[in-house]
Image (cartoon, rainbow, N blue to C red):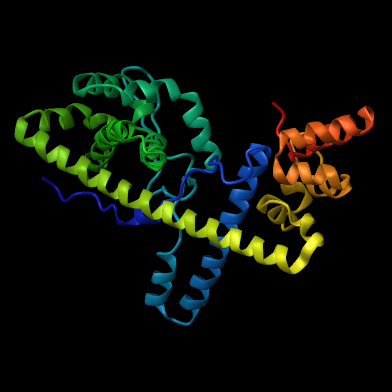
Amino acid sequence: MSKGFDYSKWDRLELSDDEDTFHPNLDKNLNIRVNRITRDRKEEEIDEEVKTLEQKGEKDKAAKAESKRPLHVNNICKVAEERTIVNFSQGRADRTVKNGEEFSVDSYMEFKQDHKKLLDEFTEADWDKSRQMLAARGDILLDDCANNYFLLTALEEQMKGNIPAVQKLGRQGQIISQIHQLAKPMNRHPRDLVHRFFDRFDSGEAQAAFQEGVDHFLGHIRRRAEEKKKEEAAEEAARQAAEAEAAEAGGGEEEMKAVSLVEAMYTMTPEERKGPGGLDPVEVFESLPTELQECFKSGDVEMLKQVASAMDPNAFEQHFQRCIDSGLWRSG
């Protein structure tokens, strides 16, 4: 059996951009933009550090700095080659790369949305059905985005403690991953190697070897999830400590600090932070009466109802609609 896949780089794996890292009443699209901008700035810092070290000729230090870069759906895959495959019996052209570019978050999210039903069906498939589905729909299931889907979704479910789902995702993801590994040295599209892969692993001994790869993958997912939880706990503790310290030092003036999203928005351009209705959330927040600012910061619906009953109805409706249009409050 060939040497197993190196999973060590996945120790730096991050969750996708739609994870809930801010207040639940804040507009989700604005949260995602903040996540992306924060991550991009971290990458720019790493880029600058690597560039400086390389210019000094310190290649080992540059490689060490590069190894700190978090992995996510926007950089987990890079193009090694670009090719167009034609002449399949179904007449479809397959792709494992996208026009010579790295996959973007938007491409991945679009792929997941467009093919969610097929991906869910494959997740629940047994060995024989997996073979049939890959032979029939390899154009989708053997796309690099599908490979990323099983990796990222397994990590997300592990973070939630949904172990049965993790085991299914890990097993099915390893079928796809190992077919890719089989095809790569042959310079063939993975779809061409579906039947050869299943023929190779049909016997009991070969099945045990395949399961060993699955177990190895699941071990890395468990370790990364544990590390991610510790990182999030440390970040949350640091945030709470900073807020407590700031509140003690700043007194009443600290009411304007709000949640971390507000702080992040002040570092963004008006175009980057623009809400779903086209309004700037910073401008809207600063224009709100103090009692409405408190509602936004706390997300307290009961407090909002009290403020609404005390205010002029027309004035409240105007302020509240602007909060929704700027992304400061999520409707529904």
